[in-house]
Amino acid sequence: MDLVTPDLGLLFWMLVSFSVVFFILKKFAWPVILRSLKEREESIDQALHEAEKAREEVANLQSDSQRVLQEVQQQRDDMLKETRRIKESLLEEARQQAAEERRKMLAETADLIANEKAAASDELKREMAAHAVAIARMLLKKELTGDQAQQTLIDTYLKDLDLQS
Amino acid sequence: MHRSSSYGLSGASIRLLLTAGLCMLAAVMYAAPGEKEESFDVGQFVFEHIQDAHSWHICKIGGKDIAIPLPVLVYSKQTGWHAFMSSRLREGAEWKGFFIEEEGDEAGKLLERLPDGSTHRPGLDLSITKNVCAIFISIALLLAIFLSMARVCAGRRGKAPKGLQNMMETVILFIRDEVAIPSIGKEKYEAYMPYLLTIFFFILVNNLMGLLPIFPGGANVTGNIAVTLSLALFTFLMTNIKSTKTYWKDIVNTPGAPVWLKLPIPIMPVVEIIGIFTKPFVLMVRLFANITAGHMVIMTFFSLIFVFGIIRAWLGFAVASVSIAFTIFMTFLELLVAFIQAYVFTALSAVYFGMSAIEEETH
Image (cartoon, rainbow over all chains, first blue to last red; front, side, top):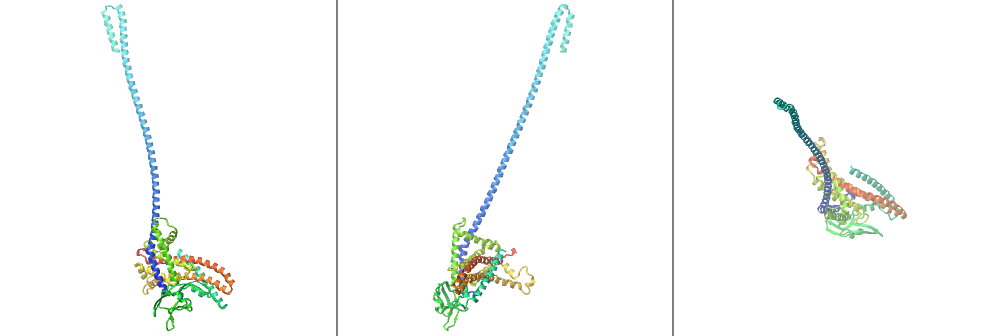
């Protein structure tokens, strides 16, 4: 049947013209078009990739600032604690020093008192002795005037008094 | 899966409509003749449209054909090369011993009358026929579209696509991502992309041009066996020229087939070698049959108007509304078929390329 018998002339023209169009498009059209498609795809890919990276960086920055904030807070807390500790220790030291001072003062006072007391008692003894002697002299002046024995006795007693004080 | 289902659907509907169209054609051919002197030959009307011609017939006004004359380029074994316009051969006229046969098996063909009165086909007929002319128009269109697109692509580097560029890129990306890469593989598809894109757009443009009812469309280019034969031949050549050693080894020694199928009688190798030729042959027949069938059905519906119009004028107008509605439906279907057939031809070519580009380690 004629419909399915290929016509030689048409076959010839078809082979020639298709080869020509294939050659021209292959040389001048397809590489340019396909390359531009590929380039665009790659640039979109890259842009998406970069956006992802930027997002990651922002997240990193955020977590960084969080960390810094936490560190600062920690530092502040530490400093406060340290200050409190220093204050406590200073106070304690002051307290101890004051106590020491007081203790020293007390001791000194006690010494002073003891000395004064000793001096006063010495004074008192001496005065009492003087008074006693005076009284005694007055007594003796009356009864023992010129009595050697009595004078000796008085001295003995005086000595005893000295030893006791 | 997607491919086979979409093709199967269109194939089935085409077959159904073709059957319906042919039934009507047969009914009309039996009913029409003998009623009046002036009769309308549906078969001739349809086949004249489907077949190639030496002039581009546009219409008939007052019994006179309006046609674009085309160059005739012919070689005769007796008288050598001849070139003239087909207007010389109008209505059976003879020029330099050549004429166009009007009846019989060779109707519409260019014949040569020898001095002894016998006629025969000339040695070589390289005339620019209607189909050749339509191919040239399609090629001009293809080159215009894609060369301008390439220029736009080069000029708009790194910018968003625009207009025609955007539309074509969608189709090109479809061919690349849905046809070439799945069939051939990511490593090798690039070498085949120019060919796949060229056949896809060549078939598509010719299919669509064929759907236009009037010049510069209306020629049945992709429904011509010579055209589909050459397209299949290109796919055949591409498949086998770029094939790998593994492909040929698998043909001679099919992996997975039992030994008794290869020795002593080499059944499998013979089947495989036949397969090398049947694959492009199937491509050729499928495209030819689908497009021809579509054109036939549309033309048959149109011819109904004239068949009934000759019996009674009012009957013709009555039938016209139904016929036109059917033709519109068919044209939409053909629009779909135009895309599907371009896709199927390209997709199957890609599958064949994928088979022949197979490497040892991939299986």
